[in-house]
Length: 395
Image (cartoon, rainbow, N blue to C red; front, side, top):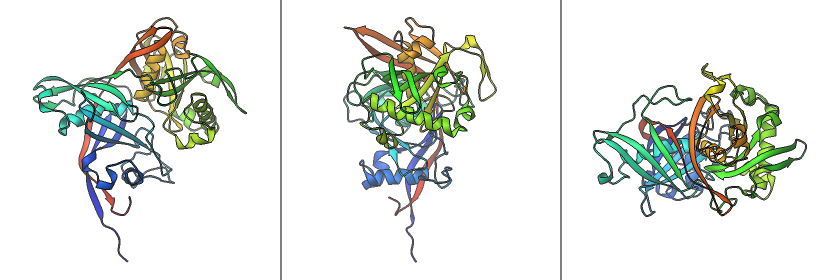
């Protein structure tokens, strides 16, 4: 019996924010995987080690969590006044499925670094020392993101003293600007798809909940923690060890997706795991983070817990942070009310690993809320570079 040999593909394994993923240049991929389709999806599934009925991704690069089951494909930009095209694929752990429906805000922090180091940014745009402004076209959501990447002696500076809760070691700060982060109508309508900042969501056999449904950064369903029977101080195990709670959140997510216009029927939610996100908010309280750090009531404006790919996230997704900052800036959303109400240009929120500050510029134009940009700081680092290997007959 003969078996197909392994092939090797140039790749870089990177941390961006509180996520990790495998990064590729599109022209380094095998030819049939350079375009969207079954071959590309099968290749990325095999790289990451999915589907894995054991849920461990032992035979791949994935880390068996939504934060570490990620892939990125980059290319020189085809868009005017942009440097790099950024395509993100969220790989399911236990299913043969790659979700292309949204962005990863955390890995965005690593896109600029990779683009500079791999010749995707014109040399005359890279200073010898200082900050390189990388103009990113986010292909999944068709939005512009600006990454401000520190440069030292012509090379990307990765080490530094910037600390990010959810990441063990300090690194260099990368400021990210998400321009015009609200949806422009292509996928679910305007920033508030129902036209309301607060709606009532009826979920059969579970109940009716006040929700803020928002398309900003990533489509997100916000609920009040107390309406779900929670304090807002919960850590991962409090939610992820409760199968009944996870099923309840998934059902709420499915019905919320229908109300947002993202799907037509709740049965479609299983094929759209990455979006929308579901999160619950509460007023600020003291709690102990997952690392043992004490977070005081005065350290935050509000608390937020968010689920990704069916599990409570260990920190906060970058795109969900954009949604939080945007919703906080708009009076009377559930996020804004949890933060104390009024007009806000920035909030610091508590998540399971600590705190994060995010800013947003919101304006009311002709009776409609618009957000010009959302800003946050992240960090990124190359963990390994070289080649990934996959069986030649796996895609």
